[in-house]
Length: 92
Ligand SMILES: [Zn+2]
Image 1 (tube, rainbow, N blue to C red):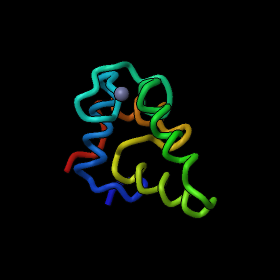
Image 2 (image 1 turned 30 degrees about the horizontal axis):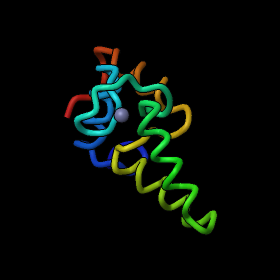
Image 3 (image 1 turned 90 degrees about the horizontal axis):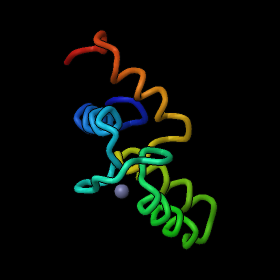
């Protein structure tokens, strides 16, 4: 398991998209603005989040999306970019 309980493959996919300056949603070529998402997809994420009833459901929804590589944790984008640029990231 990689960071934030993502699988290693998912984490690699997320880091590659962040390094390439792409929105995390498959097939979207827009520039990410916040948390790895373009404005459109970030808006859709918050739209879904707002329609859940309880803070617990919202926390679970967000954690699931983070684990599935569909959004970054708050503050994660900078860290991920720095790691993705380094030639010394762990291999395998
Ligand atoms: Zn997008």
